[in-house]
Amino acid sequence: MTGLTDNLTNPALLFFLLGIFASQVKSDLRIPDNSSKFISIYLLLSIGFKGGQELAHSVFNLEIFGSMFLGLFLAMVVPVFCFFILKQKLSIENSGAIAAAYGSVSAVTFVTAISFLEFEGIQFGGHMIAVMALMEAPAIIVGVLLINIYNKKRHGESSASMSSVITHSLNNASVLLIIGSMIIGFLASEQQAEGIKPFTTDIFKGFLAVFLLDMGITAGKHLKSMASNGLFILLFSSIIPFINGLIALFIASTFTDSAGNMLLFALLGASASYIAVPAAMKNAVPKANPGLYLPMALGITFPINVIIGIPFYYMIIMNMA
Image 1 (cartoon, helix red, strand yellow):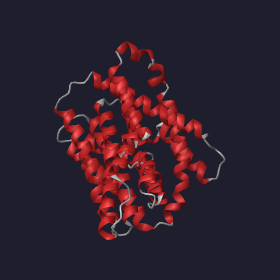
Image 2: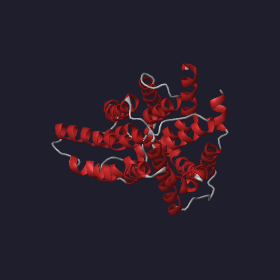
Image 3: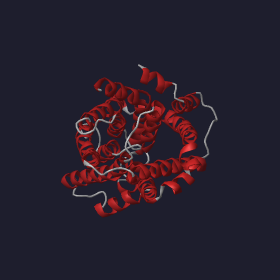
Image 4: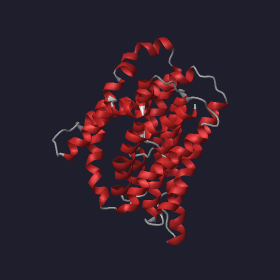
């Protein structure tokens, strides 16, 4: 219960809830688009740079390689079984796009989990930033590949060439920024990193609070639209994250004793992308309805992971110790 109480009193989460409340009472509270984009760039840059610094001081051992492998495994397997569940009720295009979203990751959920770990004083490995970066693109590629395969079987048509999908996935702004800043952090010396510490570390939590306020406003706007899409969509976006998160947590526990790493793996497995995947699917699969996969990931799964998921997985991990 302590983890749940701490999370519910975490200022970043309270700002997120304030954003949801503001949208529900139809307040004119807004974060300017340019400011929101800048803050998202800052968060990715900061977390990537700090991860690169941690990675530079890490000894590359079996745990790190195992973590990389697990991340890639989740990013490729989760979209497949999600796709076969979804296509029982939805079109091939929508099934592939939603499956890609749930196989990919939410950088903001990951950053919020890191904030929780720092609040609790729990250490985690810098290599987890690299794992997150690795998981962004493969799920998108698998999702589009599944759409292409089933469209060829049924209609003899293809949604997009795989080369264009791979290129677009790797060129996605969030993927490029997190990988690029991680490499820069890896190459920078401790003295050089100390010089920009006030920017990358000291103001991080303040910017995260403002960003989550904006995310709360956006998520709140999508809540009503979920009701019109039926019980199946609501159940999927509520239950699948916990299934994926528990699977990731169980596998991670077999090769790491780090509570911080296990929690981050659980959140990486549970989260759904609402930035990288929508940007990629808009070009690769125009027939997929963003009115489905965006509200599912942002309006349902993101709040559940932040409010319930983080303390839930933390409680399990503490009981495992």
